[in-house]
Image (cartoon, rainbow over all chains, first blue to last red; front, side, top):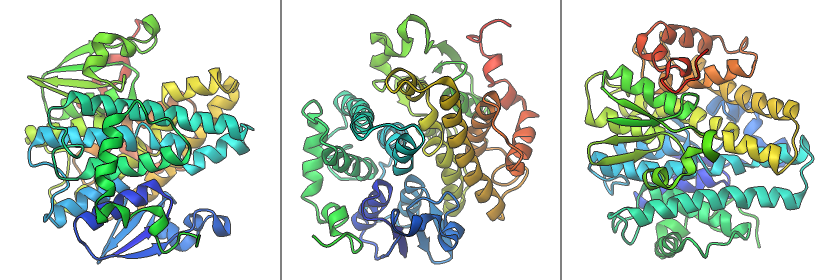
Length: 216
Length: 216
């Protein structure tokens, strides 16, 4: 399998975690979102991913886009080490946690949205950072409440095995820290993030450990 | 079942379509997003949906949030009239279409985001409308390309039966029309939308046909 990825992309980071959790072999194909006018906009990549976003997963003849759809495909196609619970209600809860981040939180802070704020609306860096923190805080507060309300919350988002919700949560927490968001009011989230960071599947997927990360 | 819904909410509209397509009985519980400071922020509703967003579906003892998670739950729990294909690749494609709208397009134009633009960043109505159209155009172009590229595109987004992707697409097209977006470059989308509008399941779910729509 080949994963078209950018080291700092949250959506690619989610899929890297999922592939690692499932122990699947894959090759990273870097797509630099900033270099060369954005390699995601180049014709060759656009043929794989018409939305001009990362990630894209190529598995044999299949080309897959959208991080959550990719992770569900992996879970259905390679069922060892499941990332979603066996019961419909559990799956609905895990998907809702994932979507509270992947739909409600992350897209509003995506690179192209932040650029639009700066370039089209002349929003200053400080206001842009406030925007970022506002949506991260709102999203993480919602997830924290969902974790507190659920009897199924365990060492990880759903029980004591990591899964889809954790694969989506950890990249969002990484971003929150990078932008100095205050995480003191989301103790379940920081506890689960710490539990995830102990696992090789998570830290090997981290931006700094990617082949396309700049040398430090 | 009770669906907490706002007539004009895209996410609620998706779930109404899905419930109708599956022929499931449900009662609408209106949550007015603008009245009383936003009924979605009231304590009673927050207990059901800590993200303070619509929709929420109550099915017996279960309380479910996030429109895509709700639709997948309905499809798994009430398998008659499936809304997702039987094969993993087909499901991945349908989910990717749905997420191209539900993750990449709709959240950036959500009510709370538009309000932040106006109230916190002093963005004028005209620039706000441009913002709206910019993200709708980008999202619908991506979906159009995905439809053109797929051999499975039929009368509907995937084959000749309506499903999850159509339930997400139609509310986005409704919004696009409301904001006078130019749809001339997305002929597959407008063709599929027209096919959907012929079905009672879709038009009964439309904003104007909801019990909480203002009388015209």
